[in-house]
View 1: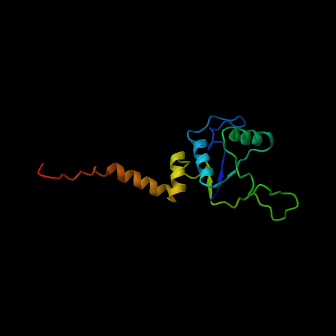
View 2: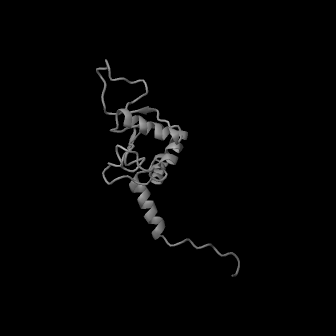
View 3: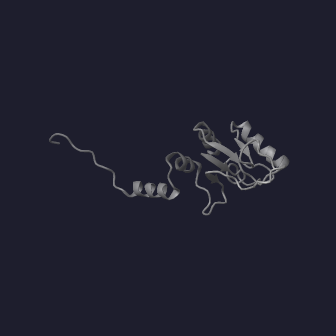
Length: 141
């Protein structure tokens, strides 16, 4: 799966143009997604120096993106009449989603289990409201 990932507010707290603190489990989850053979694209409004700082920050923590602000590493804008800033990806992970961003554990679960956020929430509610299952008693006790 090809996944576009925002930086500010998604991987790190909003402190643009500075880099904020890591959002808990963001880097760990991104590493797991890369290990699972997903192609991650850093998709950010950052440009120039601030973009390179974000790329370097992630790389220092072991996250190297398939591409940065483009569909594939070799894509160029120059001379490409079909160039579009709209990425061709399977999913976007961005704090500006309607309803915000779930925690990184849920994001990983959604991707690996191919479930929607709604399905995960329903399962969580169901597990919290169901009474614990009683063990069968064997014998006369």
